[in-house]
Length: 501
Image (cartoon, rainbow, N blue to C red; front, side, top):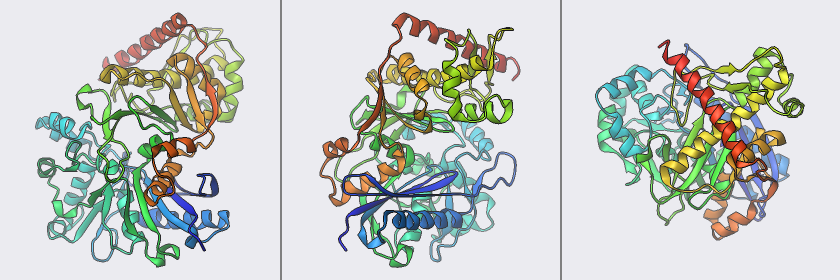
């Protein structure tokens, strides 16, 4: 049977998705499975590496069945993944040596504080483009080496392999023949030099990480290895490895400086393509490597993480119980002309970019006797749009690059009130694609580019089609007045917290 299809595996934090794409990048089959979570102590979040692999095989097989094909029809597969999650395994046997430490895990915050006290934060920022934070992989790996019995000794002897989720899946899919990652995932470890695209010896030394544990680093779009027949029933080129947010940036066709996407989920990730320079000096955003093509030079992105967006809607449903589903928020928000000067600051887990204020707390301000649940629901939806503008404005200020439109994906794009308000508050169009599962699609598109399903980025750009486009309709003076009012509310939320820390 001719190899006519592509497989994209998106291994995420709470579940794993697989999509089968046909030669026109249409979804021919899909499957999803939840991933069990483990919380052994407060602030700790773990996954069982065996579950990560098992769910990936499960959904890949189910997506092929949904498409009515078998693995011999696959020209290539691509893997995208939750990025900073950290795994270690026996290099010879492939057996995990500990549970995976998930990107959300905060156990290494004290180690980060020690490194900060030693004056290492400027070095981390300049070399890696990242903040010195427990979010990233480097301190997670250092913790494992120091806290798993015998692990450091074995690592120094070359018996241990470290990887992010992409590396783990590649290793298992190839029967242990390949230990590699790509530049996007490497750039999230806090051990990788953004400019040289190499592991940084000085940072490795500061973290106490033996170089022998590290994977090879490849471009995102490349044939990294071929799967073992025992994994999926055929020898399939693994032709893309890419972090999930960079995969979404690629699927959204953001290939030129200033092209920007946001993915609305539990939180939101805004990425701007920054061209061929990393902009580490701008300070308020994380600099990261964008998906790279074999034989081409590096491309970079700025990333702003908004910690609470969709989870604020969940809060309305699960804690306040003033809605029964996220879907009803659109109609409720439209039932009032505005918020009645009620403002919600979604600092339910501190504030991410551009503030990076872990002490800030959520605030609902401006309530009067006339405030209704509709005003509160609308204020929560509007806060998602305002938080996105915070990030986009900071990106433009830090780079001098103008954002001409925002390409949006994720579950919240179904809310047309929010999408229109987002366009109004940004003052630029918001473009929603026909296929919103951008992470898995991005992995499939990159794999297809590697094996010749598409010849260049222009062809990839034409694959993306628009389902809805929201043009800004709010007058500029009203837009700016509302944003000033929002900014006042954020300042009060931060001042309230600072008075108590």
